Image 1 (cartoon, rainbow, N blue to C red):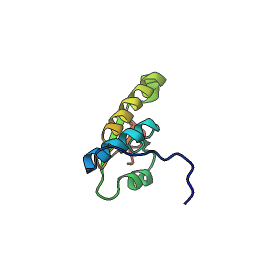
Image 2: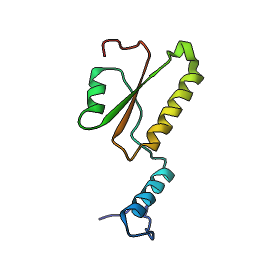
Image 3: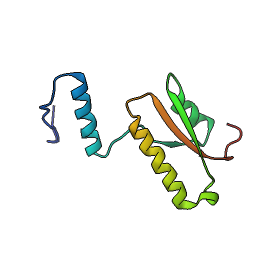
Image 4: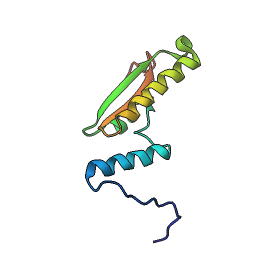
Length: 104
């Protein structure tokens, strides 16, 4: 097939742990990470992100009027860092504002 020239030679260990670590480092360099942290806005989002054998963590953040833009951004940054640290696990992270979706 055609190549765009972005291939990188792998010269690391030839066992699964070494290859996995190398692949995660390459993903990190490219700006990739874990599964995205998704805002929970409906039952459909909950079902699509959490169906199957995944573990879902729903973070209830303060309302933006209570915490402000900086507070919301800090909370989301912490949640994204946690999701990134758990990228090898079946955990999925969702967030919503406290009291936003009582029907869920």
